[in-house]
Length: 274
Length: 131
Image (cartoon, rainbow over all chains, first blue to last red; front, top):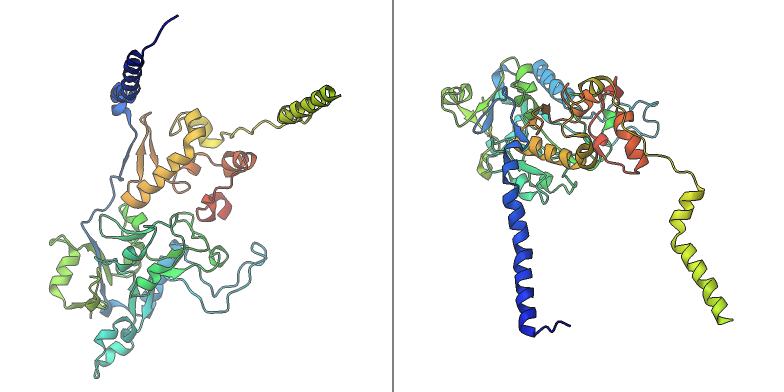
């Protein structure tokens, strides 16, 4: 019979404990050579880069037709629902049409005095009363929506685009309350029945999430300009605000521009040449 | 008397404990459907990970892909096998559905069998279903 003293037992137990602690370290050291074959994620070669994306809208080049074309190009390609249409009775038999005026929009036209309430003058130049002003998400430098979002579904990407991760949106709508520009809309209903033609290149949204303009992040990744720029006949320019050589900075240097509700300190990245 | 009672009780107990086994013996069970490789997937035969890893880990992979695309704007994935993929469920040739053409036979058959209902397709669209 082996007689174990407390002393010898503690010794063995101590050595065993060290051994158990060492095992993970040894495993980690042993797994080091695998490092070279790790999978890798990277951007497409054709991706357009910017330090901070911004937009300049030349309002003198906008007219009703161009505005309509821009709205349509954006909304069609991003599967933005139109709640004024009657849903397809066969495909969505249980869906009733919407009569309460709810809407979802990524880019839309607005009167001057709604878009720029702080620039309302008593004797405002006549032309501003009927010029269509295109408004959209301003992709602010200090986005209040990002601060309000409790799940980080809304975030500011490295290149300044304020983006949404629809997977993570819980539909609390804090961002809608935080955004001073009304750039966000909520899907109170399943949007799918109200999309006339679904574009397979972009997902739809689901009931219960907020949505907004994404500055065509999916197109920039393919090296293409946003839909609004392409449809605008030169009225909209998107480029790098931090690059002094960029077209957008040249435009800003040559023209007097205004931004929406500048006094709030959100630093919008959408500039208007008036 | 008490001995018999105990024995009877034990028999009932053992039967009850083993119920999943004898239940499976007397009822017929369906084998899990295998995802069918059709079209491009059948000929190329090179997926992102190898077959067994893909079966077990595809949801984690998709999670990584989603964060990478949405948050970091990284859309290209080069796997350990050296192949490059477009990190997308359904857009483009080199995406999941770009290669695995039939969603019903590739995704749905297994998911239905396993009684999981991922909500991918509430937003993402199957290009085949639109047309």
